Amino acid sequence: MNPVHKKIPVLIHNGKPVCESLIIVQYIDEVWHDKNPLLPSDPYQRAQARFWADFVDKKVYDCGRRIWATKGEEKEAAKKEFIGIMKKLEGELGNKPYFGGEDFGYVDVALIPFYCWFHAYENFGNFKTETECPKLVEWAKRCMQRESVSKSLADPHKVYEFIVSLKKKLGNE
Amino acid sequence: MQSQRVWLLGFWASPFVQRVKWALKLKGVEYEYIEEDLFDKSSLLLKLNPVQKLVPVLVHNRKPISESILILEYIDEVWKQNPLLPHDPYERAQARFWAKFAEEKVRESTWDALCSRGEEREKAVKSSIEALEKFEEELKLKGTKFFGGETIGFVDLVAGFISYQLPVFEEVGSMKILDSSKFPATFDWIYNFLNHPVIKDDLPAKDLMFDYYAKRSKEISDEKDSCRNA
Image (cartoon, rainbow over all chains, first blue to last red; front, side, top):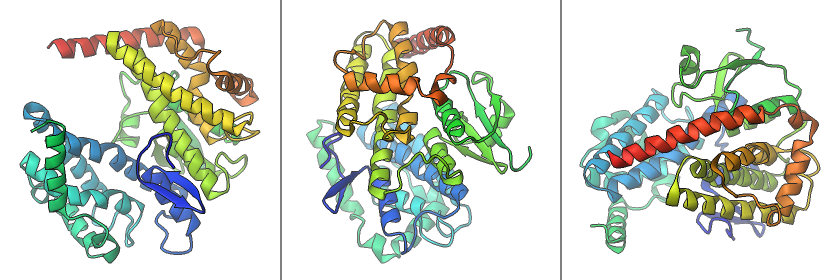
């Protein structure tokens, strides 16, 4: 279903595969467009939402990975960079309940899945996101009150254990 | 800045800016172009794109939009004539997929190849060729003049750098990436693309590109080497 990248997620709809998570999210938003739109209707607001989701996509996983996969100076640099990324996102959130404004939207969907990885990043990096970016963590907890989020996100402790075993496999202790 | 006017902040050699220029031209949108010196960034650029501090930045109704692929989506949504993306959601998802692929797998690896040396360069050349093979396969499957079908579309604009910039990279780096015997569909596509009326009159000069990329690739490779040896 994904011969080009051989990666998940792959959404299969009417027998046809759609790949790349944010492309899939936009596809879902377009096909099931009459319920709870994720992207705003105004083109400028859509461009802003796409920009920040793209920012999350390009920065968060890679930087987080460097926190748990490296040591010493490299780890410290990754941790500083991660906090910087979170602060930028916190700035973008401002006083809104969600990145989408009053409603849970595209950028919220892009970022919240990483929340269950924060516990692992914090353990490996020896920091607390809540201390550095309290408003962002408030936002994350608000999202976790939504059943669609809390029921689909993995247990942070399981994620941590997964990374520990992954590090062992990679010979990376 | 009058609100209805469209401004584009750019850099003459940038393939990202080029995508936006082509899109605006295809749609018949008039705009004012501001050339930026990327090595001495203006306060205007830093104000309009504080997060990335990069070009292109499109300004419309006094509001800035950055990231070339996102700008193309914005242009397509605001100016509906000559659509860049298909109408059908599945086809749109495919177009977005291949645009992302062209940018992240093809362009980035060709840039890495240009700006590295020795083993690192060989590895990047290999990655570029592998990515272009997938692009070639998709073009063969589609069997149309352009990625967008019989007319230029979203993927063609994003992948357009292959037609005019990659040959310059190959020359600067004395690299062989696009072998015409191995990439017949890509070469046909390049021919069609470069002969399109909107494209052919709007390309940076080859000799200027050669000089610029020869200088930049040396600077970046030297910087990488000195970081390694530090």
